[in-house]
Image (cartoon, rainbow, N blue to C red; front, side, top):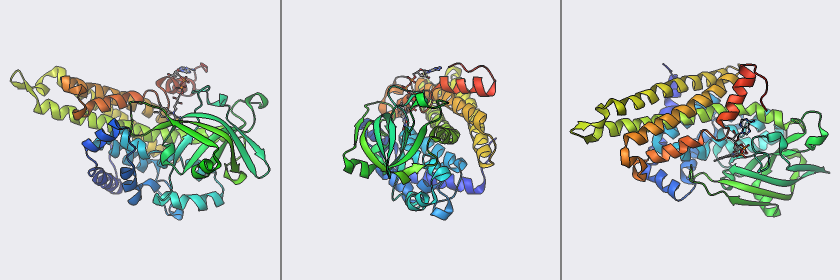
Length: 392
Ligand SMILES: Cc1cc2nc3c(=O)[nH]c(=O)nc-3n(C[C@H](O)[C@H](O)[C@H](O)COP(=O)(O)OP(=O)(O)OC[C@H]3O[C@@H](n4cnc5c(N)ncnc54)[C@H](O)[C@@H]3O)c2cc1C
C-alpha cells in the first residue's frame, strides 16, 4: 500500500484543514451559479500552497509535482471535486515552462509574485477551434516587429482566463507549411493579461458548460496584441517541445485529482449504503450495492499507486511518459466507476443536487475528454509503449 512521508502527511492534513472551511453547500452553490471560488483560491495562496512548485530561491515552497499531486488529490477528495482542484491546479503546472525555459530576468520578475499568490499564472492557451487535439495545426501567429511580437488569432477552452494575471500562449512564429517538421515553428509567450486588455487587443467570451461550472473556460480572440520580445519563453520555434516537456507533469497531477474524486464518491456511497434502510435492511448489506463500491475502491487504489509511482519517477528524474499516461487513464476510469457506483447506491437521490454524487458523476465524465481524451492517451500507449505504428 502507498505510504507518504511524515512531511507529506503534514501537507495532506494542512490542506484538508483549509478545505474544511469550504463545505458541500459552498461547492454546490459555486457549481450552480458558475461562480469562481476566489476566496478558496486566496485561502490556499495565503498558506503558500499556490507556490508549491516555485523554487525556494524565488520564495516558493520548492516542492515537486508529487506534493502538488497530494495537495490536489486532497482538495478534490474533500468534496470540492474538480471545482476546487481545477480552480487552482494551473498554478501548480503552468509556471513549469517559465521554470524550465524562462530567462533569469523573467524568473526574477515573475516567480516571487507567483510564490505568494500576489499574482496568478494559471491560464494556458494552446487549443484552437480548427485544430482540436492536432496542436501543430494551430494558426494563431506571433510576428516579430522590432522589439515586439504581434499576436493575432483565436484560442478556445482557455480556463481561468478571468482569474489569472498572466497567460502562457502558444503561437506559430513560422507557418506550418514553411517548417521541415510540423512540430517546429511554434513558440511560447508570457502574456500580461491586464496589459493585453489595456491595449484593447484581447476579447474573451465564456463557454457555457455544466461540468466543473465554477471554473470557467473561454474563447479568446487576439487582434494585433503587442508583446515585448523578452516575453518569449525559451527558444523561438521550440515551443511545441517545451509544451510536451510539461505534459507528463500535468497528467500526473490531474490523475491525482481524479483519484481524489473517486475517493469522495466512494466515501459518500459507503456512507449512504450504511445509513439507508429499505426492506428492513441497510442497502449496503446487499451485494449488488456493496460490490460496485468494493470494485471501485480496488480500482481507485490501483490508480492511486500508479499515479504516485509516476510522481516519484518524476521527482527522481526518471522517464515518466508511460507511467504518467497509464496513471491518467486508470485514474479517470476509477473516478468514472466510483461516481457511477455512488449514484446507483443513492437511488433516486443520486440525481438530487443536495447529495453531491451527481456533481461528482458529471465531473468524472470530464476526465475522459480533457485535458486529453481517452483516445489520445491510448494513441500514446499504442505508439510509444507498444511500438505500434502511429495511427494518425
Ligand atoms: C473543460 C475544459 C477545459 C479546458 N481547458 C483548456 C485550457 O485551459 N487550455 C487549452 O489550451 N485547452 C483546454 N481545453 C481543451 C482540451 O485540452 C482539448 O484539447 C480539446 O477539448 C480537444 O479539442 P476538440 O474538443 O476540438 O477535440 P477534437 O480534436 O475535435 O477531437 C474530438 C474527438 O475525436 C477524437 N480524436 C481526434 N483525433 C483522433 C485520433 N487521431 N485518434 C483517435 N481519436 C481521435 C478525440 O479523442 C475526441 O474524442 C479544455 C477543454 C475542456 C473541455
